[in-house]
Length: 326
Ligand code: NVA
Image 1: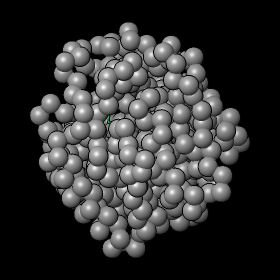
Image 2: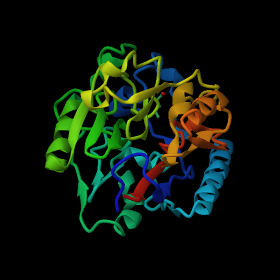
Image 3: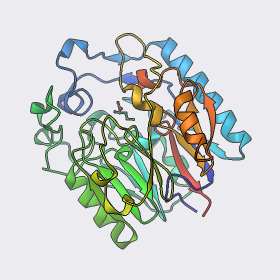
């Protein structure tokens, strides 16, 4: 069955590719959504990622694919047609798989609006009707006052917009991070689309920048990994989690990034992929986190992800779980 949480035994998954990864020319959407934290426009790179980054990232993705295949998980890869304007490294950003639905998110970045096309041939195998949530990405969706001010979000509420990586699924409950990558109108549209099959819980005031999956990580029903630099108490999170056990993530080992290209914090160590309740894929240097997870009988496959920070995606981001066993 299609995946409806982050932890049931994984059956099939899309793994991204770094091939043709690029940073598009700067426009209002890219400036606000991706680079609100960067004051100086001159520090924002543009064009193709260095080939050495692409090659090493692809080598590491290949290692991930081989590991998954050995676990008897079916692996799909995006195609590069039409050629991407951004990248196909993080399929998690574009699509939400949930119960009987596959939903293409109303991407806030103009350059990424068609990225789902590179996944479409795979997704069609799993749902007759792929839902495309629409947005126009007009100029007034973006608020340039967000630059250098974490208290002002990049997206206004003039139309719905979100990256699917602002979402985590826990069966009937879904967390949706209100952030530079997802507005409230997007959460409301998603709730309308899912109807009574899920309750969307908006997570607000926790983390302004892109995506939820270096802040909160679901490990199984009743067990969550939290980022202590961003979440102060489980009571800052929706009430269905208040009786859950918490693992406070230890300080990450900083794997660094290619000079001039930094698209994620060192907290990407939390961005793990769950194979099942007792096995996750973790970046190979994160020994302190492994020790914490082992206390809860969660084994860790320690795999390389040398350019995770450069390209802005750990093992959760670079995958999209399609089927998990019930
Ligand atoms: N923007 C997040 C990464 C999300 C995968 C961070 O830098 O921590």
